Length: 259
Image (cartoon, rainbow, N blue to C red; front, side, top):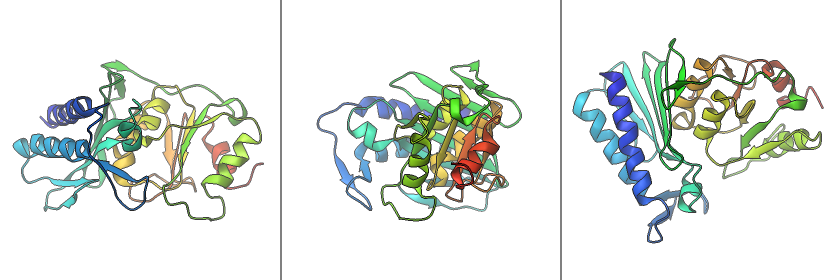
């Protein structure tokens, strides 16, 4: 029932995303900065997702991007991003998705990510692998960073810091390593899991950005840590997700140990 509810909730949110996509009358507002957007579709998607979950599990804890925490005493927590990649979505760019992770006792149990525009539904369950539209996916086999295809993201409010987003980005591109910035961390993680990218790193993520996606990467055979190589937690900001083969070398690049 948990898996069915997760899938139904993700598809319900995706139906809302598809309904509002490319609409010229879409209502858009700003959050903390001019390009940190929220749309009426974000709120509508969040509403239907919560409704689907509450129908089956009214006592479960819910954490969602737009309305925050809906705390309970349950050991289950649903971590929801009703639209990841909102700026893309608001501008008619189809790199956007619904992302929902389900946590039990502080450990990620299942994750689902749905991009209805590209018709890509990703699902992973701990210990049971990762799938795209019902077919197993696996990470890539690249063995060195110099030949890898990477993806990253920048925070909307950039803070100048040692080994910050711009400094790391420059380090890679000065060596001719292709790095993309697509604007949806959840999709970036899906595409590492599917072997399209060899690695993804980002300096500042929230739990709803990565909860489902990091499990997908791990279940597809990849590795996910913070920037120090520690076990990943979606409740801290730094994320490195790779195919596993380039992980240690990527940590060296990110920490300025390799130029």
